[in-house]
Length: 453
Image (tube, rainbow, N blue to C red; front, top):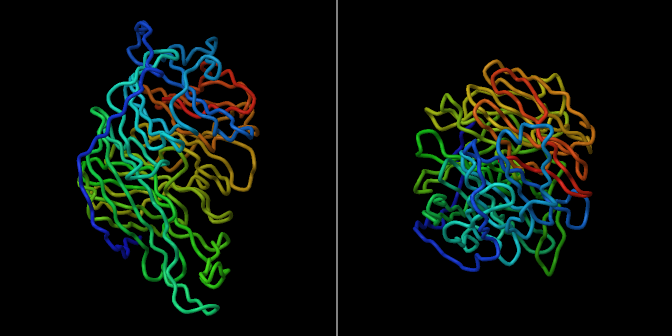
């Protein structure tokens, strides 16, 4: 295990409690009467619309909400794309939900209103009620922030932006020195929407990694630990070829080395709620990223430890892992779960997963190097075992844009549908592992079902 405090140049951590309200709500407020719901909660299904290419998911997001009983009924149909309501976002909305399913949260992704936070009350069907003020976050974390509900009632949004490489010498004898990343982080009160803290600082890696051309290229999937005093943020590491560059107007442009050995798995840890004292944790258990892609990758376990899925390991190096950040030390320990080993496969790639309690999780994965194919397995982190499910159309499934898996009690809900084709919600029992077919998902050409909340 490694735990290097990596070299960072603090730009000054700024803390504030700011809220910015906006208007023009009328076009998305629904005034339909309250829909009777004996379950006292909603299951919301989300879908991403095609923009120009089938499956690109860039045409916006539609949602439709049903009761848990409807979601479990194979005779019930959900038609998000014809009967659902659009959520404000120029591209795919990065939706989060309250644990009871009564609220959705979104920070609009790109476009004229990119970076605007909205809170919606779920009212069944296509009915959403905008609640509370809008909050402008773009000045802190850009118009396309990465963010998650880091614990109930708290959102954390982040931005990581690599600066231009630092070099010495004159043309054509330039010498690469380092790449520093600018990091911005904010916390959001989801109950009473407002920004509660902000932080900005520069961050780079260890001297050896910096010299080799490694740098932080992206951050995502923050989670707050059980003690409530730390926030862990997933990290992606990239690398420049320090010996290869072109010259543009007298300045060297270094080439990204996509064939290089991947960097060790890393996590940014900050004090919470202050967002102060940035530190990078590094694990020597796998060379992969921990930031994921649009979906939660780390959870606080029943035992208090943080379990973190990795992805993007190079082909032939052992596939995706689940690492552990120890609750006592707030650092990586020696625990590692290998999905390859548990399933007897090679080059598994965790697209998303859900920790559902007592060491049990449900993993949505693909196989690196395969263009198509999506799979689901139930995993036991205690015994380090896994059970794969057999689903229809596995060779046509693509979970790369999946955003959320829902849990209600012992039942876990996953949307399963090939791009542009009909599918179903599948319901999994946390304790027994039993699978059942739920509501039918009506699709349209080019569109994707991407989440259940």
